Image (cartoon, rainbow, N blue to C red; front, side):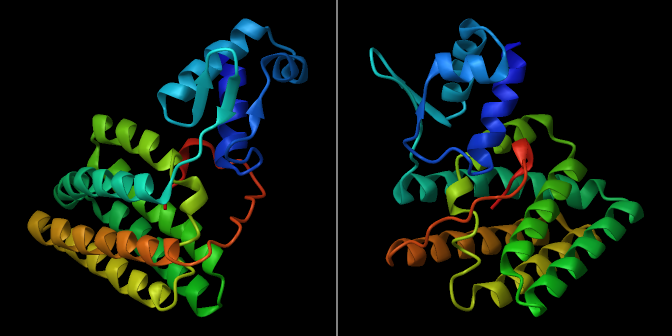
Length: 226
């Protein structure tokens, strides 16, 4: 039953239904889900280990607030991991994989052209997830899941930075072309340039008054990327 509580809380946190610093009351959650308090407690411990929840003695649990400074650190760690993953993807990719990546890139371009920047951000995430799947690197996949789940409230902020959508498209196109060519060095360089751009966009956004993060209308669970 702790898995049920974990999945529900994970989706509610990453989906924006539970906001940073919002209290997580074991008894209320247990009643809502029809599970024991022990199951909820185990779920909260697991979420704490993944950096999504903060638990304090005699004060209970809250959704953890990730600062802009920590978000930049997480992006730097993500860069190291994804640069390794994209090297593997460049060597592992099949024609079917390339067709899927090409379709995602086309959809991303369409979303940007239509002005649907939040939609473009979601397809962006699908593109990165597909690359990780192609890399077939289980350890990197597991670590990235944990890191990216902590970046949820920054998900849309970078794509809304002026000029960022066009830059992001060019960067993803370069990543795709490098993977398509089967050149791991070129793929790593393209990924590093892309995530450096994401980090810089986040720094620019943090220097301004941050817009309220839109609530995601559906459960995005463990598959979200910035």
